[in-house]
Length: 190
Image (cartoon, rainbow, N blue to C red; front, side, top):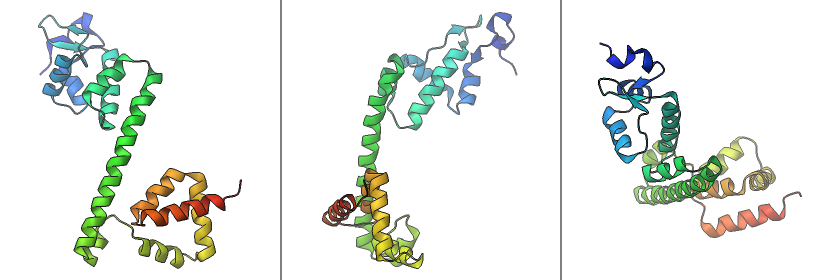
C-alpha cells in the first residue's frame, strides 16, 4: 500500500509520518506528540492532509533522537533546538553532572546490597569489582606494590575524575580515596 503523498510530484523529497516513524523506530503517536509540543512540526501537508516531513525536518529529528538517547528531557530539547549549537555545551554538561550523580547513587546502593547479601554467588554475578579482587588481579598480572602505585599516579595524572570514580566503584572508603589521590598527585611527574 502506498501513501498518496509519495505519488505527487510536488512532494518529492518529503516523507510521511509512517516513513519518519519507521526511520527513527518511533510510534506515530510519538511523532504526533512531538508535533503537539511544537518540537517537530511537519513542513507540509499532502492534498489528502497527510503530514509531510522535509529533509530538514529529518535532520531536526536526528538531533531530537540523539538528545533523547542522552536522556535529555523534551523540555530541555525544545530549548536546545532554539539555541545556537555553542549553547548546547551548558545543557549537556548539566546532564552529564546529573548522570555522574545518578551513577554514584547507584554504586552506593549496589555496595549496600552486596554488603547485606554477603553472598559470593551474587557478588560474582554483579558487574562490580571489589578492592580485594582488583588488588588480586593486579598482583596476578605481575604488578608489585611499586607498579600499583605507579598505576594510581598515572590514572590520577591522565584522568583525575575517572580515577575518583573508579576508586569509588570498587568500594574504597572516602578517606582512603582522598589519601590515594593526594599521594598520587604529590608523586606525579610534572
